[in-house]
Image 1 (cartoon, rainbow, N blue to C red):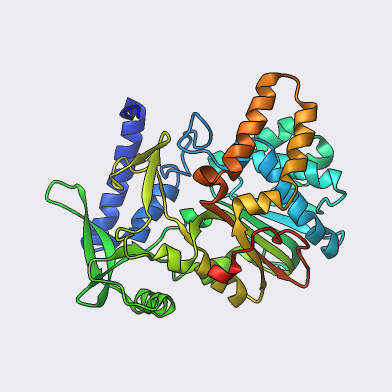
Image 2 (tube, helix red, strand yellow):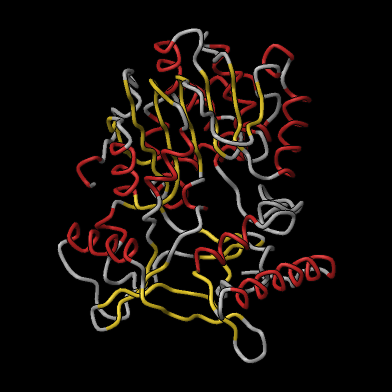
Length: 394
């Protein structure tokens, strides 16, 4: 395994600036802030957070690779899954993507929806990062013809007016700032970030508030056993409120989430005593979550049972839950791969396409670690989740 090189001079200065901002917030809060607030600042502080600053995030030059960045297959299959929903909604259907990445997903899915005669009336990207928004604009302007490019717009906030269509999010829930909890003498504590005598970030546990404590007890009842003292993990009691906020005025339509995670009973296993939270920098897992704020991604696996509770609590029916491999294979991956291979101009392109398909579907890659979950109201997904449904695990 290659050694992770230290950040360059400019990157170190950037991180030091964000560190000072976080230190000031800790002082202002009386000596400690919840870990969720620390994570929020590390990822989203304006101009300084990991997703708010200008460094490359996606692909070989960044810190991680998402499914849409591998190539065209993932987004094309999602287009096949969502086209029936858009047709059912009708000519006023809208498509809202949460967090547009580099714009790669929007580019491919719009081309696929055009081929399927299922274009939405509007394709809206809710992207909080000004830097990523500009990259998305540039890519869409360069790679889509005006017929498609003119459908795309960027939102500063979720659509509050009544709308119908689909909401899609790939690797978004894992980046929500998450509270962390632990147990002491059977009582629930919330992890905070404080400072040692030299200004370094340190962990500090404080009694949890009523919302987090109740959420932990709910999980204990659901898994059928109390957490042992010292057990530490993540939990998003705000997930139902977040979901209702981002869908805004959605009336009829579907929600589709793809992310890495587990059903609840698999998530909160006794052997996973330190939770799932981890940091990534330049395709390396970084042991120190406090290391280089603003330069590394912080992420936690998704509790898909909690997501199912949030979606049904918002008035939607659970349409299905399965592995990413099952979802893609059930939505035309083999056909999309064959079509792409037919258009390939050289052996290198053929090899990339086949490697992409393997990365998306092999169990040791993304195929089993990533899952898909859909919700529907007044529409039907069709065959999108017929392959390998895992709803019984929830």
